[in-house]
Length: 328
Picture 1 (spheres, rainbow, N blue to C red):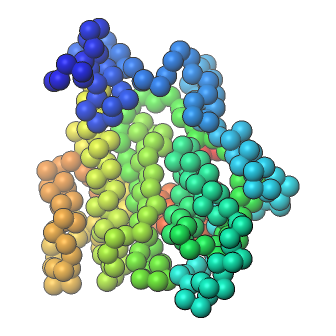
Picture 2: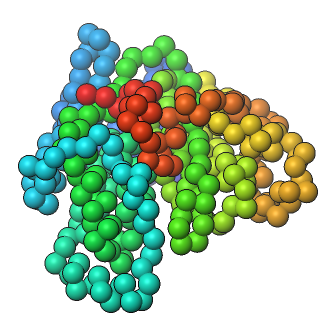
Picture 3: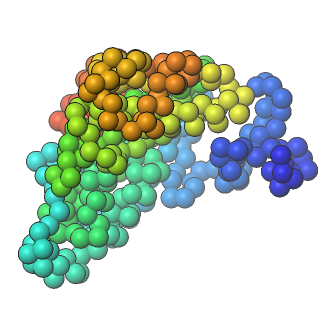
């Protein structure tokens, strides 16, 4: 270990997260030091930290920040909606003629600023915004009125959901569990699919992502398989940092609602139809074979990663929020 990775008091810097230092040989005498945590933290980087030590509950809230965002973009008096994206909005790239028509109309509209402000909230404590931000961010270089309408829809959602918090509760275990999903060929320009995953440690949500897949999937099975692979990489990282900090994490559980993708991850029975898939995607089979990941079938209605790949009806969306402890 390099000298700069350990200070004179015996703390060791995490190789997986440079903001984390730890000291001690067993889980009972471990001390963890977060560089950005000075004393009992109540607010950090625009997030309020709300504690209830008796109940063992900690909440992260960006309510104050989001109210300021609404004021900045003159949406503080807007009418609230119940979901972050309108499923009827089908956005695509402009033709050259459309772009020429839209550019003058968008010249005075702060599209990029609004998307950036919303992205900061999503990264900090709001997985419920992940899919919507993934969608509007695709057009940040060439915005238009329909894209601006989508951004304002997100702001209208936040009007009624500024006080939603990412909630952590006391747990007697540190098990790592992930959920992944995909939406096949949802991109109207290049027919790429959307991947989404979310991970919980000790039953608390700690990591999430929604993104377009880098290549075009030729089937729903392939799209789900690629989503599994992306989720597995995140799970491996979480497993490493938990193990480094002294928690037992020899394997993690990964939930998927596609039985065919699970079968493909466990063996090559579909080889004739999937031999074109890039070799790097198949590394998940090694993880399954050596016991690093336990892939489990989950019903679509119970999969919270579903909200990271598409717009959902209100009841389904709220069910996802409850599972992830994104609540008021």
